[in-house]
Image 1 (tube, rainbow, N blue to C red):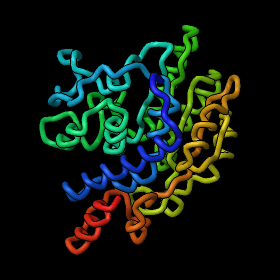
Image 2 (tube, rainbow, N blue to C red):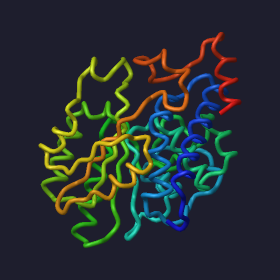
Image 3 (cartoon, rainbow, N blue to C red):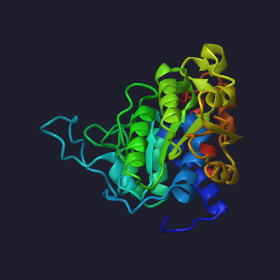
Image 4 (cartoon, rainbow, N blue to C red):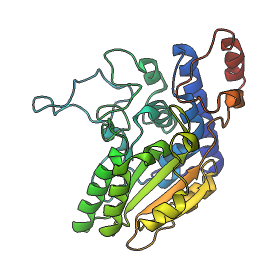
Length: 300
């Protein structure tokens, strides 16, 4: 990191990330707001304290959608450009849950990799600031059409750095609902077998998914025991504590991938959402709620 941020600055950045996503939700009457509530400290800590990234190579305001990747369309600016160089010794960050795009963009604004004005193009037809992130959207290394896909891509990247004896760690940010996918466990098994101690997985354990509470749809606990059984080093923390996030990402063990289980609250910072618990995947406001949330936003 070229700039040092205090813990207080990171905590304030997390509040600003939530505020921006609430603004988007009010303006568009719909966004993945609960995911911003749960992940803001994780994303802010990654960009402001944990990751070693070079300067952004992306414009402050992204251009238009370049079209889907193909052999005739490989020169577009990848979303990873906003994280700077993908070469060693710098770290790389893979965002696995594509619907977390709004908090990712808001984090990039907070650290000066995107302009505040860029958010005006959020989910606007013809532009790259899509609601569901992909290869060409700011901050994203990869498409994520299949849940848990990113950890397999990241594991391959981490292995490549290992055999080239290159420094720099490979981070994956993912949501807990993805853990229901078999691909996740195959990837962790591979990461442990190839001793990928340069791979760090941060999981937003907010215990919510599309249809309801994760424990009711397909229980994933006990997560710590499961990851340990697959050969990973694990840390179980409060995902809203910047200090715990910083310390956990340093808990490396030689020959083992590191999994940081970040237990979070999907209403963190916006307690008005509490009555929606269990049905929080995509937030829309009813007509009689709008003014209440607008007033809350204006006082954030």
